[in-house]
Image: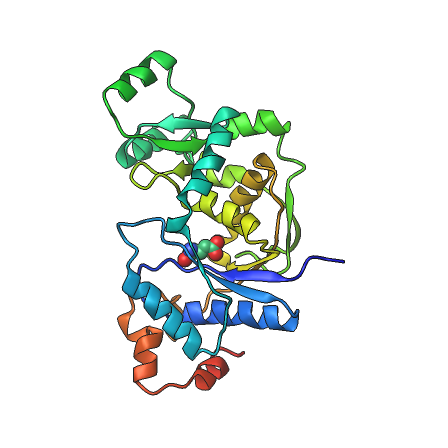
Amino acid sequence: MSAPFVTRFAPSPTGLLHRGHAYSALLAYEAAQAAGGTLLLRIEDIDATRARSEFEAAISEDLAWLGITWPEPVRRQSEHLDDYEAALSRLAADGLVYRCFRTRKEVAQAMASAPHGAMDTFRSAPLPAGEEAERLARGEAFAWRLSLDAAHVRLGGFEDLSFLEEGQGPNGESGLIGARPELGGDVVLARKDVGVAYHLAVVIDDALQGVTHVIRGCDLFEAAHVQRLLQALLALPTPVYRHHRLLAGPDGKRYAKRDRAETLQALRVAGLTPEQLRQEMGL
Ligand code: GLU
């Protein structure tokens, strides 16, 4: 028997939801219902400097207003930092990550001064042991980055990495996609300030929660390439991906958290009904 269909809606509680979120959440919910499966709500609040509990409360309120239901308890990433640390330790023990002491500015400078014009993505290597020890002794902050070179050696290349795209990437990519993790460069897996970063938390959670289908905006298509590599390195299952188009406003621009007037809360107060919203979005 095949695994039950499990998908998730995974907002970061750093602002109010807008039409774009409603579209994504409704697509995921309808897909789960059509498959007799489940939509999980996951709160991606690892960035304690930006996440706020009132936004989390607003998310639940908005989703309930849309007619979406989900099982409790929700998974809150800030309550599971141990899971991410354990995964990071495994990667570190396998020599697949390295400490990066560079500031944002230094990363940008390194990319700009790369030979043959600018590098698209940042790639580097561990510091010589002596220099690293000195910096650690001085208490300098560092991020953990995934080493694409080490990963490439470990897996003997990336040619065997693929994922199934049942939706579409931003350029119409669909079907069996060969993963190109180099699109992301040596991604940060643990931030200097927060101790974990997006890609790592997402692959761990998707696996722990038994997510079979990732349904999300195609702005995260590139992330799937990176996440596929992490799944291989951590021996985690790969879900099916369904990236969807991004909803745009009348001005042709995609909705963003900064458009205050377009939040679901504001639309609700203005008298819009969930039915009208669905219709407007072609659902
Ligand atoms: N938390 C991410 C966001 O709000 C979504 C992550 C994902 O769906 O993989 O954009």
